Image (cartoon, rainbow, N blue to C red):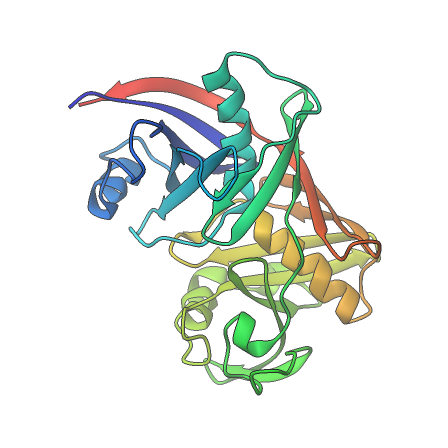
Length: 280
């Protein structure tokens, strides 16, 4: 089988995009996606994203397999790449056009802003323990600045779901965090029954923070859109961030707003085409 693909990245968080409109299910298995994501023997990516036919009164559906073959509910950088890829499939970039995308996290609405920028209505953050999910608190309680011991070290964490689980840790010095060592310990911690993404955040000022991320199913990545959204939500809840804050990730910056008006989180950032090709 000849498989056509296009590779995009959002601040270095890179994805293989596949036109899957002829089938309601991904045309690749998770194991095949793992092979494509291999950076030595495949195309190389953090995940494979499939553009599927519309359902639930939307324009398109999105599915994604991580580089380890697992399937996340959503991906913030991935949805921006998805939207930009749609303009390629449709043959025109309509500035101001908003797509309704069905995901495993529900309806997500990206808007084409032009010059490779996409603004995404990420919906409302979920804050209750059962929604994340985590057993760090009772089901109907929030987890804000709560003690969690990981690898014999005390961390004070907050938990937010942006359709996928996030555990957020504010630190004084981001450079002191050994992400490759501690990231897996958080991801597979027994308090997170569906595992978790983990963000470490250094507040530079109330409207500007730096963040590193260990992504569930992908490990260290250069950026995480849902993680940036969760970072600002946690920052506001901990009285550390403004509702409109720039989040600097290793791959670049995202503008995040947690709106008081509708309680939705809005993410604005780039989606960049790398190349197109075919694999056999």
